[in-house]
Length: 415
Image (cartoon, rainbow, N blue to C red; front, side, top):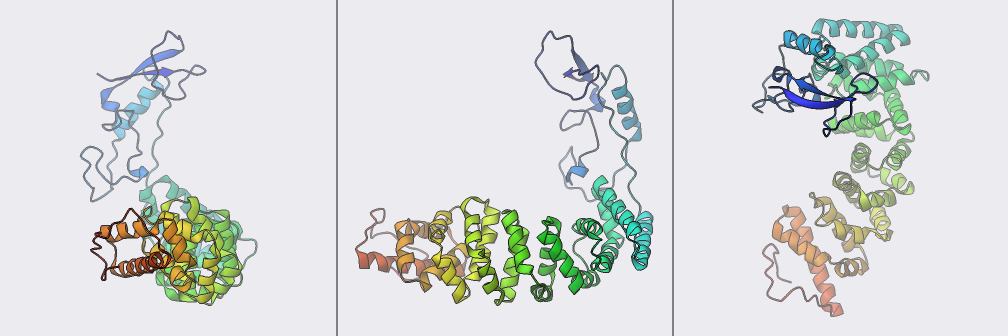
């Protein structure tokens, strides 16, 4: 027995399968998909999307596969294609014949042609080869792997560097960066080409223009080697480019990570970022962004608070303490949040501690200790609780939700 579906015909052919209620409409026709043509998971007509969708397990047993090399069943595919086009298939769109995977020899040939075109400065030929790599990558993950494993990464880096000073090469450079995002990690020789002054300048220009692939590639380069961070900070207008990036896209985690690396490596960059309103923009991100963005924003705030100038700027933002208190139990990675609160409260005039206490921080911090956290974070939480306890005694503040018999297991000294 096959799977029976009712399919709505449109204009004499079936444009899309739809499981619909049985009606007397003459334009609806029942189609039975033969069982041998059905996917064992979805029970729909078999196609080729499993591995191309990112799965690396057997669709039947769900075991992880040691190899994604497949032996195509051309016979069954042709049978399905024939059935789709027949009257029995009801005019269901014929499944396409998958393209033949690219070979190592073909990739090597493309790389050789790209290298030669780069040496000649032949923009059109370079564009043709890079576009071909893009197309191959879109066809299958297997193609991407083959392109990556046959030296395309270095050739693309050389091409990018060679055209980085060409004002009319924007399309080529954008396409090259797009392909490089799936060539990671980039080797040392490739890194040296992407981190020249001209290449870094062009990457920053792409970032300034909203290219998120450039944001991702810069982040990856900074994480590979700290010397790349030093080189990037010397690029004129780099802080403005990153600020424009996070202003344009508040979910741009890559730019937040890069900003963190820049400030952590060179605190002299803090002043310029503060002038560009980084603190207020980062705090606004904490209001309603998803947790992954909040956590990266907190790492930026934490490193800003390493400087006196940064701490003063953070303390002046009226949303900081309320948001920090609100987020204590809502994000999974609390180290930076606690660190920011600790730095702000410890360097302030006491009003920050009073506000945190009034907003319920005491109870939430105690819960943190009871649940458990890292040693460094635990020490900061303990000190925050002591600050709050001192304020409670001075102001006669009583929180009736706590009794004197509470046992603070993780606190070194009783309050």
